[in-house]
Amino acid sequence: MEPRSKEFLLRLLRTISPSGSEREAAETWTEEAKTFADKVWVDAHGNAYALVNEGGSPRVMLAGHMDEIGLMITHIDDQGFLYFTTIGGWDPQILQGQRVWVRTREGRIPGVIGKKPIHLLKNEAREKVAKVEDLWIDIGARNKEEAEELVQIGDPVVLAYEPQELRNGLLVARGIDDKVGAFVVLEAARLLSQLSPKAEVYAVATVQEEVGLRGARTSAFAIDPKVGIAVDVEFATDFPTMEVEKKKLGAVELGKGPVLVRGANINPKLFELLVETAQAEGIPYQWIGAPGGTGTDANVIQLTRAGVATGLLGVPNRYMHSPCEIVSLEDLENTYKLMAHAVARIDESMGFELL
Image 1 (cartoon, rainbow, N blue to C red):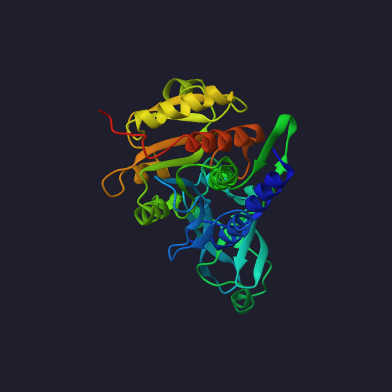
Image 2 (cartoon, rainbow, N blue to C red):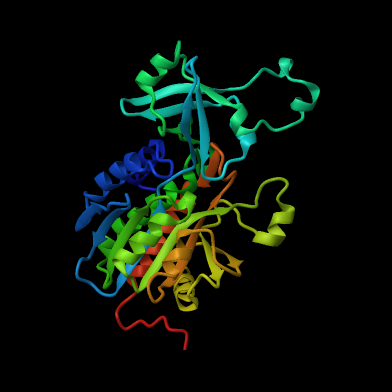
């Protein structure tokens, strides 16, 4: 991966962007988009757009959501402790004892998620997973008045993790789901700006995917594309205890390339185009089956207006919806290369009708 692309990826992963609070990620994404795109803008919903080859045909939409799971402040008690609810799907076991960043109007405030010490728990409580309502955030405030000078109800919170490289080209970070998708679509657009595509290409960093695929629905309606390709993370099944899941989900490994999804959510001709492009460009790939709608932006893009020829690329991801998600940098690079070269083959004469 080129140094500039990698540096952009790390900047994006460092942003705080739980669903409904994506502005920080959008600012980073649009700043990078302005270095090459014909037009860059953000809509009233918060979706960020980068347009390449304005005036081309047909319209192609590339979508990756920039929101991440997080927390939201719901109450401040008299002692200055903060109570919260979850944004998106959390495993409650992950939360207790974590350090956090509360994003306030003045910037980030560090804190910790507190819980009664194990020594003071009754035997039955020790064997149970703590509920969210039994946890709180401690920012070191003396009382409610001091806390309220810093924090407001509704402020977003994330676990305090920085991206870090591991061995063998692997990257660990929080928010990989799906800031890497937003990264991939913009890098694909950057590459397309050099490939002279026939299509008019809209790269979109969508919002609120983790709370109902909301941003993809509104942005796809606005663009009205003929073709839409979404990028999201896909469950890697290459670590212990995943043998049963392999039989249900398919075998997916880090470092083996992007995952092509095949099924009802996917246009068969677009799927074949992705396969043919990967083979022609020497890009490794994997594939899985998805018999119905997928829980991704591809689902609502396909169902926009009179229907969109839709594809879905997955980035293999270990430990999804945790602060230590792991992906392969090589997989990311191969995903945006495959996306760009496939879109470069699309022209107005190409039909995606099934008969």
